[in-house]
Image (tube, rainbow, N blue to C red):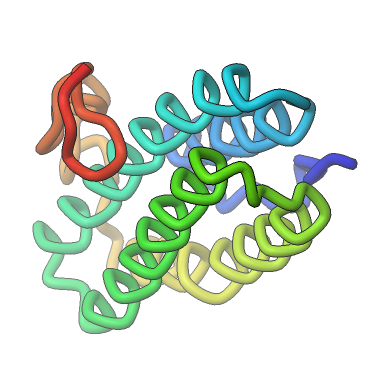
Length: 155
């Protein structure tokens, strides 16, 4: 029961592709877990990585004044809301692995295909090199620090 990463999902930017691959790795790690403690230990880093990745993409979109930024951010917020629901389902012991596997598979692939590829297409069409838009060393610094978890709580 995995959400398989494939090179077919690459969007053409090394940093974003690496972030996506890590997102898939974290989702799959979560889906391998069988008890509440392990699920909880996996959902927090998944949430953190997702927020950092989204912060990176959103900063790129702001810097280039991407015309489709609003629907892209709405999609990001939808996943963050679902990750909060995931954390609640784990805490309440109502987590259903098959449902979440289906959700992650559909959401991640759809988002990469319908939102991230067009973003990179826009950047390439307008000859906007990503390394000048968002230097690689800024990834992860975003809006959050390592102590941020779902619900905005602190560890």
